[in-house]
Length: 368
Ligand code: TRP
Image 1 (cartoon, rainbow, N blue to C red):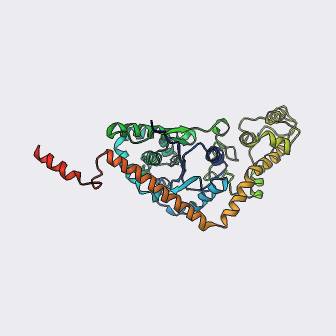
Image 2 (image 1 turned 90 degrees about the vertical axis):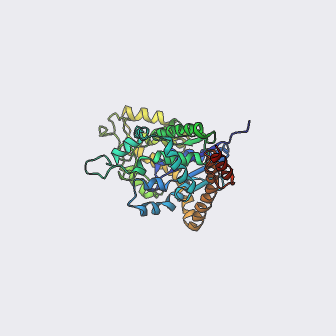
Image 3 (image 1 turned 180 degrees about the vertical axis):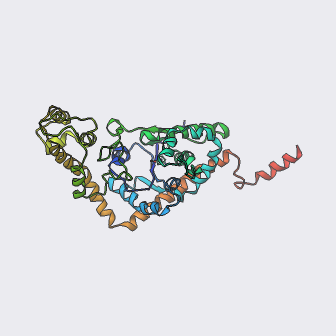
């Protein structure tokens, strides 16, 4: 049997700068996977078309964030010599595939997608007085299926919220292959490991770090901004005096330490404790101030972000190169995805102009 290739496809909507939530949720993981050498192809898609599905009136916002997101990728350590960074809207096969996939799914099935349901409410599309749900938004899981399958990706490293999208993609692939013949690869989700699986809260303690809530720490934040944000972080409102016992639940400082602090960080920055468990013990016993913990967190985060800042600083001087990386990555993606589209059209027997066999087909058709 032919050896199956091991291919990754993942992506982001370019609607804002990437923040620490993206870092723990996906970026850190991508760099590890990239550097593992286990993959034959790694593709990272800037999903600007998907971003348009709920930003149709504001394409400028997406344009503004195109280079920004590319810079975020490069500064966390995505290596364009290994990973292909590409721009969704400039890859025509994705649009054609989406159109065929629309026939492989029902509107009833689409309306059961829990992530979409949730997002419809979040965006107020179901509020009285709203214009309603844009069809492009409603069907973006179908377009996302095209993103994944066009690259024949078998592995999609994303967060839990994307699980319904991958399940939808698997169903469409199965149906397509059954209807027209085996050609597409059924993708599998690769969920983050324990440490990353937790969703990073905002610095205000709200469940999700997000640009719209104004509670994010950006990868591009400088040291002063980071320090200010950490110092203002939500901790334990009942921990009024240092000697009071502190609570860990909902305490952002500890959630962030869970996500980032290593035993080495303790050795280097706070040798009074060997590890986070010891620190937590002291905090819950009482006698440990929030500000001390915050100062430690600042050091921990700077250790993570310093190399990111350094790389960003270098890439910012080379924006024309960043542009070329996007352009060349996209060209490569166009060629890969055109191949897949062509194989699909062959299976569907709508590849009319590959040869002129349709002429003979017609002759035997009328002779029947
Ligand atoms: N829906 C993803 C998000 O909002 C972005 C995305 C678009 C994506 N196409 C993809 C993720 C394909 C994985 C695979 O984060």
